Amino acid sequence: MKPIVKSQDLDPVTKSVVWNKLLSISREMSTVIEQTSQNFITAELHDFCVGLYDAEGRSVAHFVGLPGQLGAGGLQIKAVLEKFRGELDPGDVILVNDPYKGFGTHLPDITIFVPIFFEGRLAFFAMARGHQEDVGGSLPGGYFAGAYDIHAEGLLIPPIKIYKGGNATEVYEFFLHNVRFPQGMRVDNAAMIAAAKVADKRLTEMLRHYGREKLMAYIDDIIVSTEAAVRAEIRKIPDGVYYAQSSTDDDGTNFDVPVTVRCELTVKGDTLTFDFSNSDAQANFVNCPLSATYASVYSAVFTALPAGISSYHNDGSYRPIAIFAPPGSCVNPTYPATVGAAPIAMGTQVIEAAAEALSKAVPYNICAAWSRHYGCGMIGVDKRSGERYVFLAHVSDGGSGGIWGHDGWPHVAPWVCGGEMIRAPVEMIETYYPWRVTRYELLTDSAGPGKFRGGLGIHWEGINEGGPAILLTGDSDGDITRGYAIDGGKAPDFFNTLRIRRNGQTLVVRAHRRADLKDGDVVIQKTAGGCGVGDPFTREPALVLEDARNGYVSIEGAARDYGVAIDPVGPAVDEVGTRRLRGERGKRRVSAEA
Image (cartoon, rainbow, N blue to C red; front, side):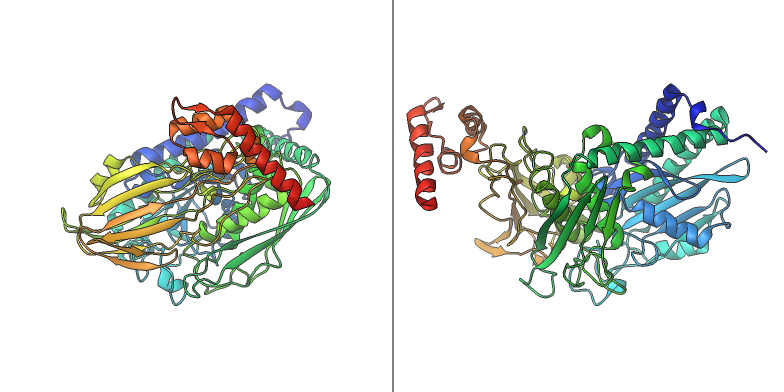
């Protein structure tokens, strides 16, 4: 029997080396996917994540990927172990996307798990998840409202082996035969499997170098240290019960009837408890599967914690956080409820409700709400090749919310992506798809005002040069709802919009809707920015002037939103006019309070 490694036998320098090596493996996995996948969403937008788990399903290392996906893996690996414990062999590859039997986030997010063996025993799992362009269903892409049930949204795949002992299974061929872009799916899955094989190689090297017992002892210690660090930060948050809520515009079936997430946060000592029991019942399309709800709560929490903790995750990161989401609610739907808009549409509301509740406890630690996602999907036939295409356009998302000490970043929303979603160059869009981009710029006066304003929104226009097509605004939001500001900050004074210009006429398309496109149609998207923090009338006039010079704020917006008068000659701050504007606002406040 091999001796058990005790904590006092562990060297802190080696512990740091092990921890950073595990993180570097995650980075290397990410690079493999980025450089070998062919799917536009994965290769260009980076809509994927990776992670490492031990043989018991504990998260070992997460470094890169979308926050709205990362926290879901812990539930998915447990579903894999429940089905295949004791029945795994080298060369096996497991695929899953089912929200109900595999804790998927929504059907287009395909997750791959590869078991890693050492000396004949299971040691780790490598995980890779990527958003695919199609998984079947009544329309390509997965982002369409009004489906009869989740089966109409695409194939539901519980944990299955698509490779057994290194050989593809018949069920994998059956799966590929039932998606619209099988070759692209095959290549992207191969990219994720290749990333997992890189992890297999690197982890095997570590196991040989340190030995299984010592390496696992270091990993145990890393997880314990991470948990202790997170709990130490939570203890700094004032104990109490805090409430917040957030709504989406509607569910795409019951138009203009918002669906609301309600959060009760209890802070007690070194534990956070998020209770969503009062949230609305499950609806259609926008429902957030439990795994996506968990991931969204984690995203909110780690936004409020120091970067040294929030940048790296393992099982210890999540232990101090309890989440209650009742079955049958919009944050934990039951089969066969549709979930296509998740994790964006309702995942955003979960993040906003959790983060706003936290902001009431620690307003200086967390940012204001980000811009709501407003993208669209275009489905058609590319006349250049005669092949079908799905253009899931993340081209017009607005900015992040401001935080004390810093303005928000432009064009990085939605919050569930945490700024990890890359914007494809115009040249790549026009190469992949029969669309010509004619306008792509930051939108003046789109940010929520504040002492620290939000990041700006976007004005995007593109011409359809591919003939008849379908436009879907499935996972969009923010036509009639928006997120929260902090401590006197403001939300932008307009909502997201999408228009179609056709033969001199303008057609309005709301979120969660469908429209038919004709050749030559111009799609116009304008998005609001992030929300602000602090009273905008206390923003330094020099910063407002700089924004005006950059075109971020108009001269009229500077006076209206910030009380800063700008002389257009120069331009320069009109100090007398500024004192008058800010003084008048102060008098109005005193009068209102009296």
